[in-house]
Amino acid sequence: MDFYGTIGPACAQPAILQHMVEAGMTGIRMNLSHGPLAAHTDWLAMIRAAGIRQLLIDLQGPELRIGTLAEPVALVEGSSVRLGSDGVPCPAALVQAAAPGQQLLLDDGKLLVQVTQHCRKPCVHRGARRHPAEPQKHCCTGPCGALAYLTEEDLQNLKIAKQCGVTGVMLPFVRGKADILALRHALEEAGAADIRIFAKIENMTGVRALPEFIHLVDEVVIARGDLGNAMPLWELPRCQKQLSAACRAAGVPFMVVTQMLDSMCTRAVPTRAEVSDIYNAVLDGAASVMLTGETAAGQYPMQAMEYLVRTAQTALA
Image (cartoon, rainbow, N blue to C red):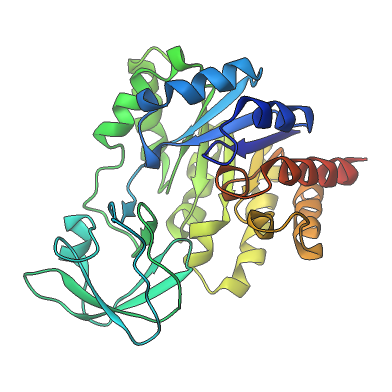
């Protein structure tokens, strides 16, 4: 079984990465939504020095993110904020597509805003959950078909992936067979056909289309962050179980990811519910599990990896 962390400011130190490897980490993810592969030569050197042999890159894909902020913008229930060039920066496609009454989810649903006005200038939104708007956080609006699937940045990252030691590519928001074939073609063009493809299931389109592409990928990723925004949250466990069962039936490995040890971003010990979640994912047949913010930005990256590995190994015993 594989155990992945995510590299970020909290763990991008040689000693911490080495401790995570000693705790059982077998691979690491690099989120390219926060910068291109070429800009992380220091991280790549640390990964190699720590003896981490599996490096996954998580492409940007067709997702929308708010832009750079001078500082987080505090939003409270009932307050308003302008979204766009003279407010919170965001892609033009979002401003154009937003309509009054539409709800937008930011940062894995921690922030809910509703469009109250649309004009030629940026949209006006009203905060409905108390949480700061922070730079480069994902914004969930539902399908946005106008966006190209592989961005120019994605293609540039794929061109140098093999020489950077990348062993797997995580493809976000997979919609169907065509998305997998597009990535496969791009990897072949880059001379990197041997790099494994990890298909992230993050919306209902991907859930419904799984049978048509499941045999074209090396591993399916049950990415519960955005997937949990695509349905009432109480339905997410059932969806996870159904996806797990489909992968087992097809004989295709799958990964479970998102908020596995979320409380350990700020606490040295996880909740009982979190370790039970890891244990059950392994019993369901997961081939790998991954930590994201817990190791990238959390206060206890080494301890989080230790809890992840030990809990999974207990389930395997």
